[in-house]
Length: 351
Ligand code: SAM
Ligand code: SF4
Image 1: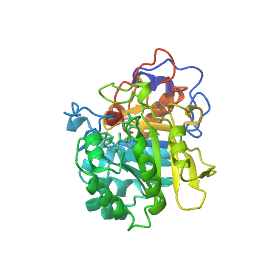
Image 2: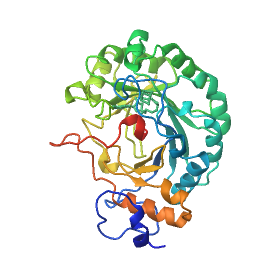
Image 3: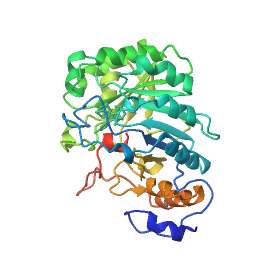
Image 4: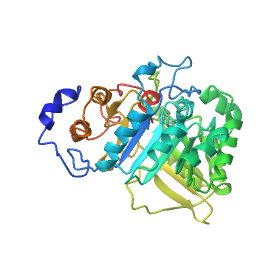
């Protein structure tokens, strides 16, 4: 099948400009190489973070609509065969999906894969860490927005900070799991008081603390620009007590990395709102129901589940992927007038 014949399988989205490459490393129409695939394994979650989900949850996907581990494995192999080097499992909360280590065991030996990682809220890590590592997990990001129990209960709507801290401590037992990153969403009038406490955590523990700017991806669409506490503001608070120096990084990194000048620890800043990094974006995403998204803020998706389930060959699926990637959005438009939110919220996309 040629690209032209597969186009009807590509749902929605802008028209194709120019000629979609049929071989070579996966590349979009702006010349960006795509190396990083985030795979959501579920839209469900045991937390209800205010910046992500409504209190009562969302309408969950039907079980039959969710990709099986075999289907995810097949797609992952196709992606890696055409240039993807990093896979990150996410959700919703990936650890609520049954037998996640089984998926990790399938993915970790894929030839050409350089990194297999997980983003989790950490609630079940203490129980699951050993199995995840044994299955081949290499890196972990644990989301923790505040080290203060009452504030944690408020923002996640779950009184679960002790479990998350225990999960992080469990990770320390496995040298295979490195680095351990802690991600905190920065929200104005909420996060300021935690900045130095997190800096001290990064100095005391083998955790890289990364601050992420609040983005308009909350299901309740309450985001307001004035709620964004920028990475620069957080950095200034840290530097008021602990001077930082940049860490150079050859890889395409979304995070700006800094170490403490006295050499004890590292922090990072992911500033998609105040300092967008779309120009070097190498990421794409697969939702739990097999929809392929070329930008967090996409308003269109490409159905990969349909070709998988209707008997398409790997080459045919590859063509559909290449055609979708070719049309990857030039940038998000958070800072432009008339910005329209993404077609799904963060937990449904896979952050
Ligand atoms: N449940 C897992 C977790 O919380 O780590 C994985 C999925 S969660 C959607 C992935 C990441 O997205 C988390 O670090 C979370 O804090 C972040 N996130 C969710 N909503 C966000 C928003 N509106 N702006 C910025 N980051 C957000
Ligand atoms: Fe769940 Fe993660 Fe969203 Fe919080 S950020 S509600 S833990 S998916």
